[in-house]
Length: 158
Image 1 (cartoon, one colour):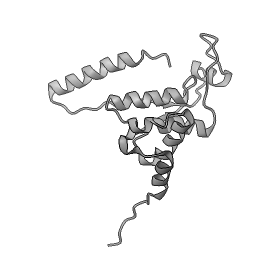
Image 2: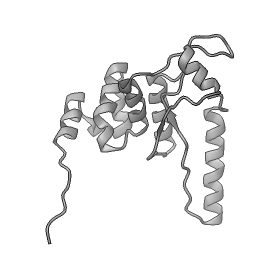
Image 3: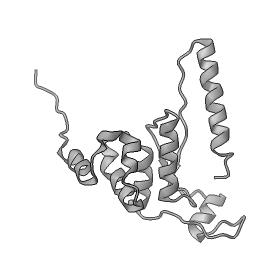
């Protein structure tokens, strides 16, 4: 999206945290993230998830890319190339591909775990489950089974 990149965000985050500590306030960063943006691959989204985790940031909301008339991103979405460079770009168009990208950013939410494991398997990076969830991450089959077996809590009658 033609943003300044990881280094600029790291610098901002460090300064934000330092200033928050200096003034004695507990404040939080709430990044605005879009999944499925034209030019963003599943591997890109995994890298972003891993970077955010290393920075201690977990997100609760991720917007799926929605084409908006008159934007370069929408042109890229429909044409399949970057009009500024002429280079072909990947665009996630299926619900499955867009869902896998979004799930990677929400890796810490139990409901997304099976999709995250599916994405890791598709990328051939199952070992990164340990980077996300720690050494108790288990196998892909175990992760999927854990999600399927989880029961929705119900309110007890009084």
